[in-house]
Image (tube, rainbow, N blue to C red; front, side, top):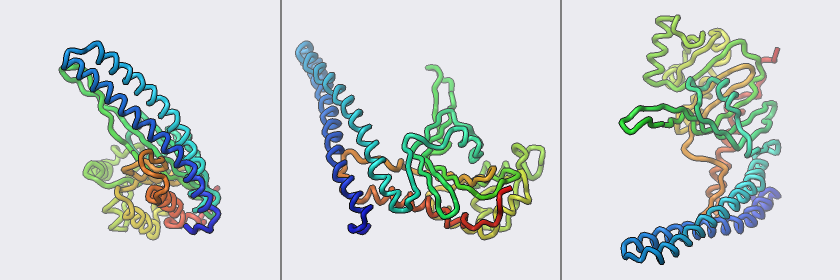
Length: 320
């Protein structure tokens, strides 16, 4: 960014101020780790040497101090994290588009996640935060970090064991499609299980999921990557035009994992599986390096550019 740009100078000022908070948090965390380690080591040495009383008192005092410092560092970190998102991420968003805002306490609701029908599995544990929303041209959109999981339970000789599995750990993007859809169209990654399910749905329509039938599309690359179901075959083909399928393939090629989409009511939902959390401040690395800001800026621009990539501002329909 240009240092003469008001957003850039404001951002630099915010980073300089927050760097002091980061150092305080980092120092408290390091002290807590050292005190806890020292307490455990002291008690262990006392047990080994037989000097349990003296070592126990010293070790216990160190452990108590360590836990006090953990509490202090957690409180400081929460303030630091809040200030980072309010004062840094907000400015980064404005550098892309002045309409962009972040609400780090809210995200896509669990009900909206389920209703999007992006995934067949409903979550047993759900968390969403860091909702960014704005307007690009004529199109309102938002995206949020989402972590949705389901639980399985196995019985072992030692009792029941719970296992948690990711449905999605990533970002869900949603935008106005400027059309009230009559049906529901869902586009998911193609794998062995989905291919078998598609064959069953095609061969025995009675087994199609929730009235959704397989949609045969004429783009070979799209059909190789995705599998599409819809309750309205005509509408699905009207939505998934040759140009939109090409754009979706291009968008997918820029991602590390295959995306999922759904077209419901008047919105398009897109799920992006990701390997990391975004918009989180570093603790033990300086804020004054540009790398972490660059990563956050890259994901913001990527989401913002979806409107252009999918040509959502071209209004070929009007809502009824």
